[in-house]
Image 1 (cartoon, rainbow, N blue to C red):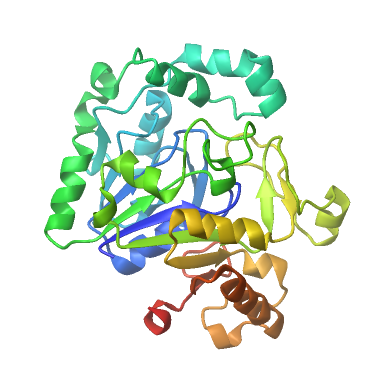
Image 2: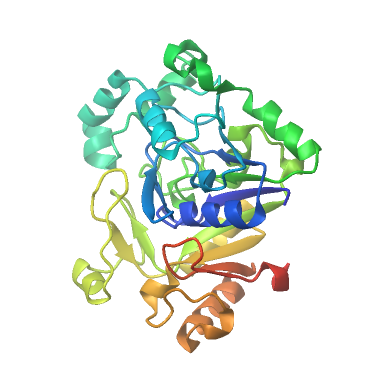
Amino acid sequence: MPCTIIAGGQWGDEGKGKISSFLALNDEPSVVARAGVGPNAGHTVEFKNKEFGLREISCGFVQEKARILIGPGVLVNPDVVLEEIEKTGIENRIGIDSHCAIIEDRHIKEDQSSEHLEGKIGTTGTGCGPANSERANRSIKLAQDIEKLQDYLADVPEEINGVLGRGEKVVVEGSQGFGLSLFHGTYPYVTSKDVAASSLAADVGVGPTNVDDVLLVLKSYISRVGAGPFPTEISKEEAEEKGIIEHGTVTGRRRRIGEFDFELARRSAMINSATQLAITNVDRLFDGNKGVREYGELTEEAQNFLQKVEERVGIPVTLISTGPKTSDTVDLRPEKL
């Protein structure tokens, strides 16, 4: 800090929303900004006994003193973002960059009717691929062209760099995961842009020398929605035996489950220039760890796994999630950083 980027290290679904909300509440940043692709990623957070599944707005909205921004690199579906603004009650502190590209109904229809995108790749059908294609063609509408977004328009790079210039904290919440990167992932079974930390910084207008930390989020097992290679995948039956049944936040599709992939994590840490690792869902993989907040109270099995991750990946594990609540977190940053 003051600028921390949260990036996904696997195929999405790592728990970035939970980590974003933890940093927002505990570190009290002045700004929490959303980077990444757009409404094809759902991040979930529990706040005030209510669960929020968000697709456009950062889960860091739980910090009620923070300005909540959406960077110009993020695709915006006006209907989705306006609904989320209302349900989170952040009308007076949300800023949408005027250069965000807009997803229209025709993009969604094209996505859902495409034999390649819907059939082969297994996209979320939210229009992101066709919209990013049109953006590259330089013919798409921007947020500044949409009347119902006028009250929320902002110059996000100007705001964020101003905050950083004053020495205040910024958290940038990325979406998707490293394995879905258009450049570095399992092409063609990827998303429609790069989602590594360098691109997440560009999404909100932060230059590389202004990034202090890259917090790479890894789930203690792996899940994946849609088609594509999955070297450590286990069968549905084996996943059920372990008590792991998950569904995508956006699509509702059942997630494919696999064991932790150390080589994927190592490469992800390398290309993201990770400075810290957050390991989530430890409580789901190892019994007896739900709600634990002190490292010494974790089971021996869980501690051995975390030490192995740290050794194999070569990056310190600083945050350990032991449940869906923001408070269900072991924070080792004071000891390790």
